[in-house]
Amino acid sequence: MLYIMRHGTTDWNKKHMLQGRTDIPLNNDGRFMAAEAAERYKYIHLDLCFCSPLVRARETAEIFLKGRNIPIITDDRLMEMCFGIYEGTENYFNNSESPVNIIFREPQNYKIPFEGAESFGELYSRTGEFIKEVVMPELEKGKDILIVGHGVMNLSIVCQIKNIPMEKFWSLGIENCRLFRLL
Image (cartoon, rainbow, N blue to C red):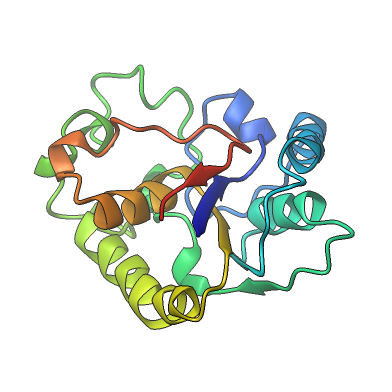
């Protein structure tokens, strides 16, 4: 089985700030969410956890798996999508004049990344490579795997595995600390 989970909430989530690769820690609510998820999903069998190296994902994985003797392996390919100069932007989704809105309103039209940002093609390339090179061989061995990451990064994996077109990128949405079974 392959499961995916988005990290718990952060202060930037509460303020509707675009985090991207900015390394923001969980807040107390996020820690509570991870602990609550640990209790809710304690009977789900897992052999391995792959995790983004960003602190909000790592801390979520550590709280979620506390006492379960499951290795947590970080990989840079699981970092959140980089939003470049727009990281730290507040209320980015509600500001229709913000150029970053194309990512959220018309993802299929986001072809050229903003200054310092990453394209969907680059994101899909690194997460697709990770799935092919790391996850699939472990699944073939019969391992049950958890990936703990971020909203956009997680969706890139879900969309690739489920063959969801870019126009429908946001259709599933992944809630914080909810376990989503992929395979």
